[in-house]
Amino acid sequence: MTILRDDFNEVAKRTLAARVGNTCSNPDCRAVTSGPQDDPLKALNVGVAAHITGAAPGGPRYNAALTADQRSHPDNGIWLCQICAKLVDNDTLQFPEDVLRAWKTLAEYRARSVIGKAVDQGAMGERERSELIRQQTLALLTPVLVLIKREALAVVEYSVENHGAGVALAVKANYRGRNLEHIFISHNILGPNRSAVIALCWETLQADGMHLRYESRDGRFFVTTAFAKGLELHQTAFEVDAKGGYLSQPRLVPERTD
Ligand SMILES: [Zn+2]
Image 1 (cartoon, helix red, strand yellow):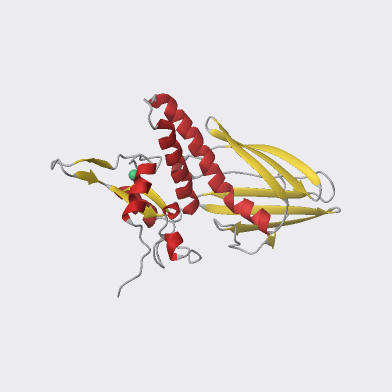
Image 2 (spheres, protein in one colour; image 1 turned 135 degrees about the vertical axis):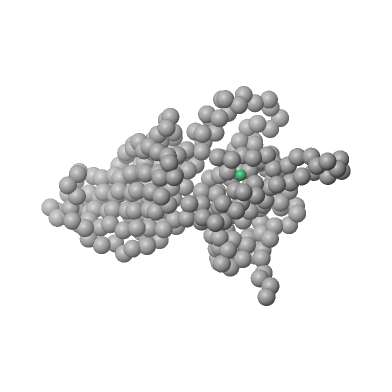
């Protein structure tokens, strides 16, 4: 039986490779993917135009909502070495769509900043690391931002900046006509096993305040919300997926003591 795959054409593949300077887009790898063969007429390629969302039903990160043209468009591709291409398709929990998009943005950022220039590798490394932390933080925040928008919990603006190993999140939210601002520092975004933890919350001290705590860890996303009604506190906890959808139904939890 033939399975229909929405593969990239040769032009799309060459474009994806050239946009990242023929290097693997995994920031922890960056292998050069092309070089010479013994035959002076031939070049060697160890790069792959990998699909961000799968080329066929059942494939890694497959998104049924896309058309065939969208699925085979360079927007849905990322240039990787053969080893990294296998890695991201074998572990879609650790390498979801958002992480691959962050890698792609970073790899293109890097290629754009070095094109036509002699590069100071040391200074470049620091800037890249900084951008990587920022991109990964944005990817980790996606579920809760989608959730907030969908449930119309609040109007939120945010920016992410890194400071050394940590990340500063500047969050502004408007909840029931009140403007709230909070800055949170989070660590270990690039820690062992990508066990990133981000806590994002805001609250008002008024009687009908809202408190939202968000944690992203090991590819799972947890949300706790608390609404005060008079002196009563209504607190729920639940898990969401990478798209902000409910994985567990919000349930009432005992009041936190911290
Ligand atoms: Zn690689």
